Image (cartoon, rainbow, N blue to C red; front, side):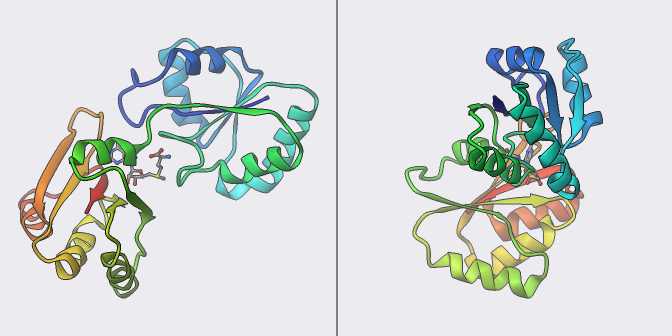
Length: 217
Ligand code: SAM
């Protein structure tokens, strides 16, 4: 059985009883970064062996994990944070398991964009999650222009390195529309800023933005 296990996006207490039980009982945990996952495992005294499974070893390691699954082993798949498969390694292994008729289940838990969407107070009956916007400003603005035609809430992931330039582009395309910028969700310095992109940008210019971000437009 392949167990796709969501893990905390910050606060180590955001893990379900079922997730802990699965992580304790499987034969192997496939982790995006074993050192990162060890912090969680040590916190809960889980001694299950781990192996790395990430973007660049996904083909070879995927085959190895598939072989173990075919032998009847129980394997948990986790990423560094949140839900595997949501902009994290998982997609390839999940599809490999599907093609090979390996039974699988999902142990749900945090996903950063769901936290942000709920906290935003924006309509949630229809929303469009666009992951990370393009790196380059021209491509990013083009994508934002396309999305501006959508009549739904828009949700984006962003890093501290690009948050200022992305906010500049959102200001250009969406003008004064109120947006929500969620930083470091569930962590010690969690912060929710609400307002026009230009106003949030000015605040961040006074204090350099750090951490991880979700933008809701
Ligand atoms: N699999 C993850 C999930 O379920 O949300 C997403 C992984 S993606 C590689 C990493 C991005 O998720 C970050 O750049 C940030 O945009 C967002 N993110 C993850 N944790 C976050 C947090 N605690 N606060 C705000 N954003 C977060």
